Length: 396
Image (cartoon, rainbow, N blue to C red):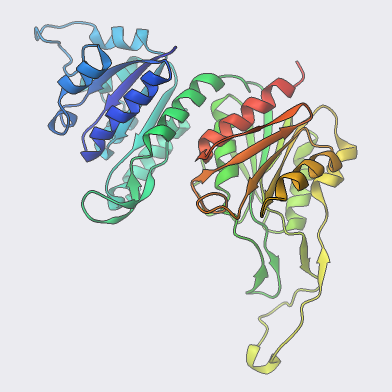
């Protein structure tokens, strides 16, 4: 059981913090709540006090309005600080190190793992100031439970919805379990999807967004690893503290992987690599009106994982198998053996709501000693479970 300090800031999503607290309690954790003044306009402290069975922190000076050390006491007792929802104002205060209220003071006094779950209007979330504040917090090691996309309370549609309470609780448990387990290790992650040029404009590609690889890289960095990402056409924010190598084509990714492999402890090949590429790429743009119709002759790309097998020393190698349909799991098992992988992660991309471009996934982690099928969860939670399987395989 962990002691979780739950900071609740202002916004209509404050009521969802009740669900977050209850899920954490059902999983065996103790929760103490600290509320900002704005949060109390949406949910009363009495609600959290009744459900947590503990006093709720609302004021720097306590009920007696006398100086004290309540913020230090709260910080000393906690194993993890979670701010959910984290409003734009609270994120700005945290990034600036302001301690004008109890939550800000607790944040500065706390030296353990910190998670924030942003929730706000889309325009506020996408504002450059909010992006800068989140980047600064990430650079300091704060974990971010990314907001969802959909209908917001004000009627807008876009990014900014508080992540699902279950996903936030998953992130809390993953952060508690994984702290420091990859300290001193070098982790290489490939992410995204390669694009093989037909001409200067067109390409043969796939639908991979890179979100799964990004989540694994972020999780590895939080666990203390030195992380390199081999990025194939990924349009996601780069995180401070992670080294990125751009590898747009299968050939580029092959070269980058060979360069990074010898010096790493763990390789996670999450990128969707094209199996075939055009045999010849045109220098300019093919003129459709002059060409009429044309044929593209495809040739196989290099099997990157296959090429790494004879080069392995003690690295832990993880592959991915994005399959389509019921027979895919058996193909994934065979792929692990054929390519001499320590682990392979299978997911069925024919299932709605998971896989390419989605914030969620439903995976089976397959190893030599068995396999584990996980229910649908956030890609961030999947990343933690994958790394949980990697850690015991590392040499002492």
